[in-house]
Amino acid sequence: MKVVISLSGSFFEDATRIKQIAEVLEEIAKSYGLYIVTGGGKIARERIKIARELGANETICDYIGIALTRVNAKLLISALRNVHPEPFPAYNEVAGAGAVEEARISVMGGVSPGYTTDAVAAILAEYVNADLFIDVTSVDGVYDSDPRRYPEAKKYDKLTAKELVALTAKEELKAGSRIVIDPVAAKIIERSGIKTIVIDGSNPRDILNAVQGKHHGTAINPK
Image (cartoon, rainbow, N blue to C red; front, top):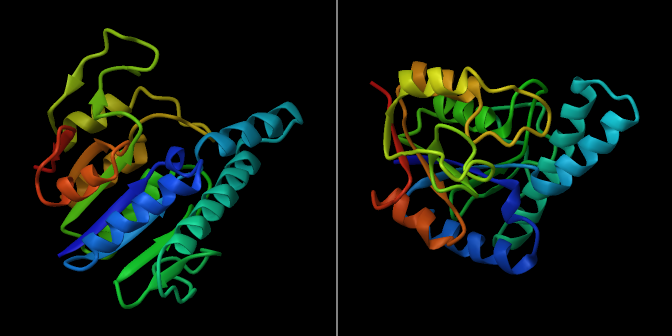
C-alpha cells in the first residue's frame, strides 16, 4: 500500500514537533510505502508578503514559497534516520528531495508556480498510483468557509470529489494561499479517483490513525 501525505508548513516551527512527526512517519513506513510533500507555512507567507510589497509578481512569489517548502523538506529529512539525499524521480526539478531507503520514505517540497503543495501531493499520489492521499493541515477537515475567520463555518464529514471541486472553485489561488485544498488538487483528486482524507495534524499520532482508517476529519469519496 502506498500513502502520500501533504504536510502543512505550520508543523515546522520547532524541532520538537518535527521530531514527533518524524517518529510517526517512520512507524507508518514500517508497513506502507510513504511519500511526503511539505508546505511552506507561516515563514513562507511572511516572505511572500514582503516580496509583494517590493513589487514582485505572483510567479516570483510562488518561487519564494517553493524555496521555503524545500527548506521544510530538509528539516524533516534531518529528523528522519538513514537519509540518502537523492532527487525524487517523479519531479526532476525538485531540489532538496530525499529518500529514506530502509524505511521507504520519500520527502519533497514544492515544484512549480501556480498551485500549492497540496496539488503537488495530489499529482504525486496519481503519479505513484497511491492507495491513499492524506492532507494534514492545521484545520480538522473541509469547511464551507474558513473556520479560523468564520466561527459559524460548517464542517463536512464526507464529500464527493465532485462536491470538493465545486467548493474550492470559488477560492482565490494566490502565492501563500491558506485554503485547505486548492482547486488544482481538487481536480486531480477527482480525476485520479484516489481516496483522500483531510485531517488536523496537531497530534501527530492522528496521522497514523488516519492511515489505519480512524480519523475525525473529512473523507473525500472519489466516485
